[in-house]
Length: 349
Image 1 (spheres, one colour):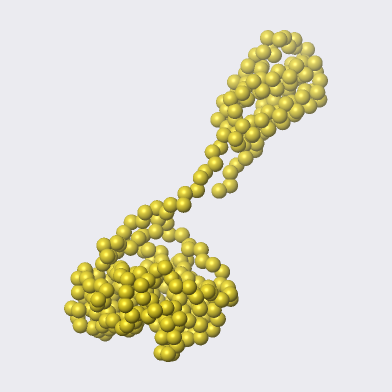
Image 2 (spheres, rainbow, N blue to C red; image 1 turned 180 degrees about the vertical axis):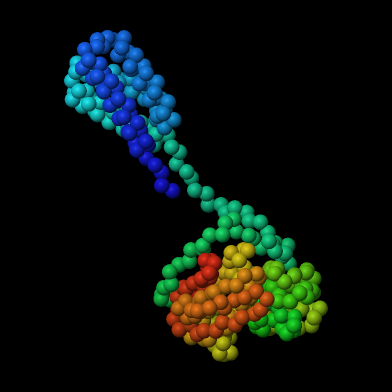
């Protein structure tokens, strides 16, 4: 925020006031009126009374004394009918007065201390872990890093975030396979396409719940896979499923997709939360990608630059849209909502 300097406020008011005094006394001298000490005292008192209230809110307490001195010196020079001396005297004293006031004002302004704590957001969705999703305090554009061509170091993540979309009419999940790393906590975002609710959702032996999730809501499933292998993601009530593959390392994830010849992910787009779930995709360089997308309420124009740049709406509410591309360079890139301004990260390894 730009702050208006105090000097810009003080100078015009004081200068105009002093010139008015000089002019008044000079006129008196020119008409042969006798200017007595009592007249000078009255002019000084009037000038100070007019000037001080307008500057004391932004100046130090002793400014009144300086203003009085400036007025008296100016009037004295003007009484002698020496207008040039009066103006010179005025300019010197006012310059010193203003500079002192500016320094006192700046010194009195407290330096704000930035807070590193983020405000606690409000919940907008039901969570299977009883930890609802959060609504951001303000809908402002998320600043993402400029894409680079630098190689991304392969390090195990501290937390894994993935998404899955349930389509009751098709009796299947999108995607049909999720790949995660053993012993690293997983946060799985789940939403559904049709009005039928999710019931008795399970990832045996890591997770089981009978919480209800309606269309337009996102369930949050949190668990830590502590064994490798292939496990079933099941909608027990409607009897359809997908696979959860747990591997030992990031290298194993890359080899899994390399063997299959394609990597598949899901993204849930929420204008209410002003974000994508999950907010980051980690992709493997050189392996074709399929991203299943669903919007909760609004239409979106989503780009995966430089690999996929759409020309028309490509994510809509009430339907699952498929975006395909083949990343041919590693680095950090942006998943950007061209219409609404929020973004996610895309890491190609």
